[in-house]
Image (cartoon, rainbow, N blue to C red):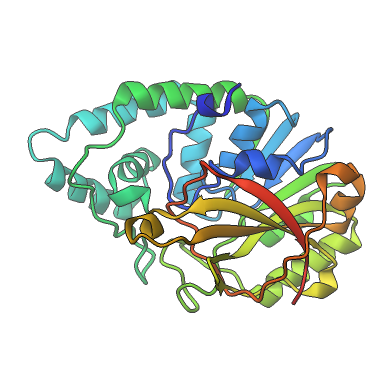
Length: 321
C-alpha cells in the first residue's frame, strides 16, 4: 500500500505517521508481533500492517479513552464511525459551543467517541491536558473536523489492517515490557522529557528517565529487540537527555525536515529525532541498514511537532551520554 494511502483517522500532533516509513526500515524482516507500549495513535503499527511487515500487534496506551478509541476503531469500526457522524452533524448551528459541551462531557465520562471528535476538531490536532488530567485544548475556529465520510474511510481502513490481529490494552508500560516474549519487536515512543519541566501537558502522565533506562537495561538482559524514539534537536539546539551509553544502543538520527514554525520565521533549521536500537535488534539487521556517520551531539529534548517530512532521510551515529 503506498504511503499516501495508509489510513489515519486520528490526526494527532506528535504522531509518528510521517516518520513511520523510516522507523520501519529498522524492523527485522520477520516480525511475529510488534508491540507498542506507548501506542498513541498507533501510526507505526498501522504503517507496519499496511506494509505487511508483522503478523500481529499489541497496542497499549495508559490513556484509557485513547486505548478504548483504538479498540473501537479496530474491532467495531461501523459503530465508532456512526457515533462520530452523529456528534459531527450536531455541530450546527453553534459549532464552538458544541465543541465545549462535548469537551465537558468527555472530561466527565471519558467517552472515546467524543474524544475522536475533539481530536478531529481541536487546534492543530494538538492534545493538551491540565494539571488535573482534563482535556483542555481549544477548538480550531477555521474548521469543523474531518468530514464523517472521510473519517469513516480511514476508520474502515485501519480496521481492515488490524482487526483479528491486534490486542489493545491500557496498562503501565512496565507491565507491558514484563509480558513481552522473545519473538516480539518493541517500538517505544514515550512522553517527551525536558520540554515542559517535570510535566508535559500533551500527556496524562510522564515517565521517569532513570526508571525508563532501567527498564531498557532489563530488556537488554533478556536480549529483547526494541526501538525507542526519545531525544532530538532543532538546528543546533538540542533537547532532552540521551539514553545512557551503558545501554549500548545505536542512536539513529532521523532528519524530518524544517518545522512549520521555522519555515514561517524564515529560519533554516532542520528538525531531527533520535531513534535508538537495542543490541539484540542491531545483531539481526543486515549491515547495509546501519551505516555509521560521524555526527555526535549533546542533547536536550526536541519538540518535534508540526514536522514536514518532504525531505526526510536517515543518518546514523553512535550513542553518547
